[in-house]
Length: 309
Image (tube, rainbow, N blue to C red; front, side, top):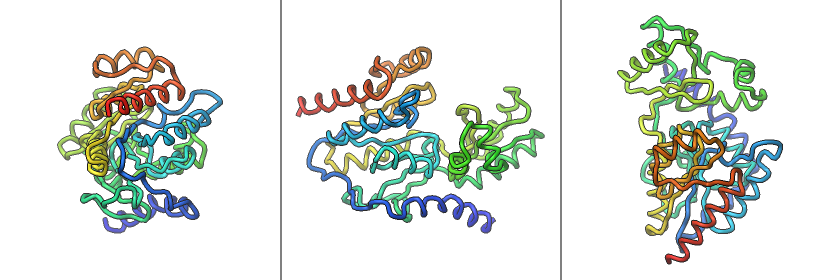
């Protein structure tokens, strides 16, 4: 067991250590002298569909930074995937990986070091789930016990992940660097099979959810707990003068919307937007899809805050 843990930790941090070599470390969080707006969003919600990719998003993020708006990424991506997106967008704010599994705060971002968590090479890290190798072992043990065949990311090669997820080999390598959960499929696609696995994992204090083409086993009980903790750290640093907002477009992101002060639904899909609106009736609807729409909605929040003050 210790050898597997050592191997897991080495793999999950290998890319991180190399990625940040030569990166700028002189950019600190803004001084806590004014009210702050903090936006939480899945990277996919920020991305412009089509050929533009991150180009329009990058411009929108720069506009928000000029207004002292923090943009916190929160999604299914691994730490290494998040770091690459952070670099693409020029972001320097904290981020949350693997559906609330880990909170990563750059060293020196807040005036005081958070009381919870641990120090790593570039971040103060708060873990909300068990290590992925433990989750993968529990998943396979449960599957063997109930007689179900499963295949997880830890069983798959980089080539397998690239093919199954439609990723490049470089992207697949980053996606495989899981630290908190184990994406998996059952060879028997019957819904009852998945329910049996979820029930068995719950007895081990693990839970299941489905994201895109894969099920996920995880030790994260509350995906939004990381959002609430980070919001409390901002409020402590800025003496309570903080307004949190959440951008979402998928019904699976309901927890995020319930955890922020101002929930916002980006209407990229009518059906998903309607489901979210029913689950979070206080949400603001953003009618213009893409970065111009959500950027303008957030700038309106900034103006509202200034007017109140």
